[in-house]
Length: 207
Image (tube, rainbow, N blue to C red; front, side):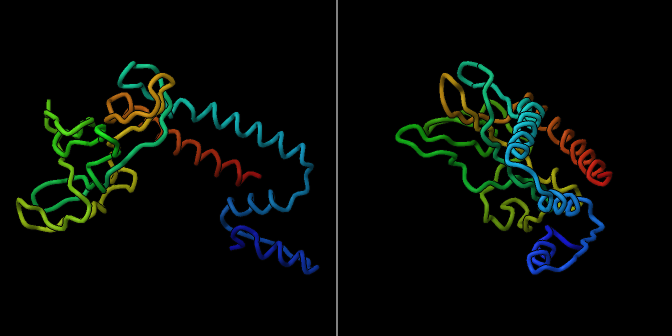
């Protein structure tokens, strides 16, 4: 259990001969990388290769479309809400229904339909299956029971993507409700994560 290799480094600095062992392949790879001598040019070349490979792999997973002009845009970040349950229903918790505050251009999310809208007025065109509840609400106003975390499902499924924040070359930063295309990209990203993690562990163990 040598962790990040700190004890190895300190022992070497004191002139000791030391061997590091770990059952986890990640710390082994980490220690090898930090203890191996290499030139600055080699490090820059490796970083450039790694950065390009990472960008080629991940950039498609950060694409959305501007809600104004429909141009392909880059996702800056995604806002999620945790799912919780009471005795009668499931809800999604949010810190606030106000996403961004600006003069006469406040950006909000509707607790009923989950649509992102600008201004003070909004008319729901549909009703979402799961309502949004403000963080800190302890009990359901319908059944009176308390809200509890959903612990019988994997961690990644306990959170729901609600809002995409993107950057359009024409219209700048925008907020939009996560649509079917965005949800498909998120599903693909989760699949890629499992694949990449498995590949990394397999290769690091081999090294």
